[in-house]
Image (cartoon, rainbow, N blue to C red; front, top):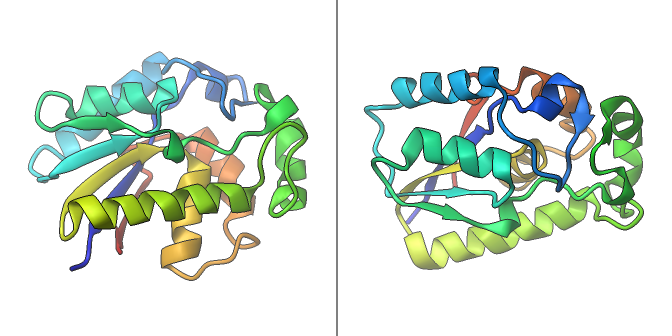
Length: 183
């Protein structure tokens, strides 16, 4: 049976507001991110999800708990983390974004590449298929896992979605950045 995944990106963080590419670094939601989470909670109040998975990095976990914790189980999963930019975690977006195309298959120094993110998402999808077949689930995470899902499910290539990573991070709105996928 197919699994229906609705994907939400975390709310705006203090790092997003400073144009910092957090990578695996945790960043708290900003006041705007908290407001976005409240807006999202209201927007999806009538949607039914069997389970919600989120990254274990603070911004995603915080968004998921604000939006869903009072109505469905929220499970943190490290496979849903953002790309590990290695020594570039927490650096300015102006440093990280120009490097993205270089690190599709080659790893960031002391980090991972976008193909590694895709492998994590493949493993996550296998787990979901084995344990939640036929379910309607929500995922709250980051841009790189979302793009990996699009590469896997929608047949996109990394070269098409990668230039939008910075734009989506700046937008950072879970209420405005929702994608649905049948897997």
